[in-house]
Length: 154
Image 1 (cartoon, rainbow, N blue to C red):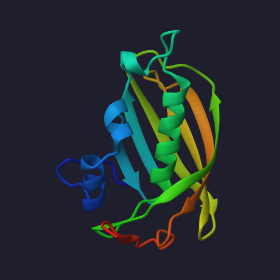
Image 2: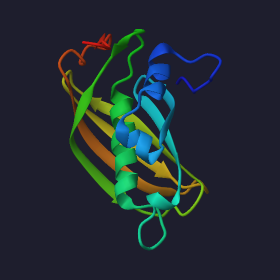
Image 3: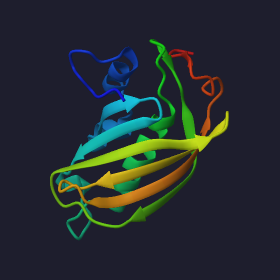
Image 4: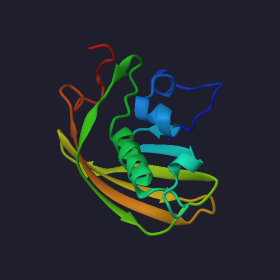
């Protein structure tokens, strides 16, 4: 696994960190580890992430588990190339709560075939307790079933 190291980050991790989605910019989550079949995201809980009970909103947690799962199946070691997928299903389980601090979400590829793959994600609160799990099914977009990916601008 390749952990984020600002002195030695690979081209595609650096690109993803600099060119996140609008939702990522709004929520403030960040990709902190990314390697073949593995990804880790973190989110510092802010007031706008909380529900009416004052805890992390389940929709935010589901978004994190979905996003980290997609990253887990789309790592590409070829500089300048990317792999993309879409979520077909995501089954979530909310088993704890996050109130403050940093939520850490780990996504892993579990298997699958050439076009459709399966994932598992686990979310942890600042105390290291599991607060959510998810299993997902993802489909690679055209060309992304190749581990070498496709040119970023294609």
